[in-house]
Image (cartoon, rainbow, N blue to C red; front, side, top):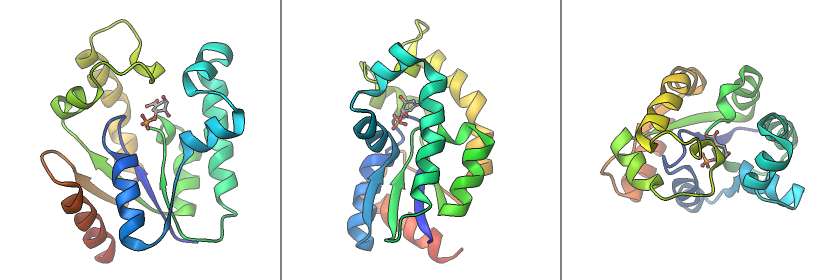
Length: 171
Ligand code: S3P
């Protein structure tokens, strides 16, 4: 099945845009973080605190495997750290078209300021430094995973959705 998979940094708009994209295509929206939390009956923060990051990362890989058997077309939003694992990038390629949503550091800071739900941001260093540090580690991996890339800065949701659809059509 050729699903649409949205990747990108925390705060890049994967969930918001994914829901809009699902509406525009008539496909069903799903989110790996939400599915994992539901299946585990607990929050991502609690999983990180009680079981550690690797436990959560293994659940992300398992979730991608579970999604392989979905029959209906889906718009899938995945966690910002999921594409870091090479196995996950391969599994996403098998699942369908991968769309990378980008955002400038300033945009991300604006969207993530004050967030307490994302354990990867509770590191003690400034938000700007943490975003830059993680982006430096992840940017090339997002690029590697992506079939298409769409910048979100300063654009309306409608524009972003239309740009994604155009980019996928011209694939
Ligand atoms: C993470 C991003 C989060 C969530 C978890 C780890 C990351 O998802 O999966 O907190 O490592 O970037 P969002 O990108 O939806 O915030």
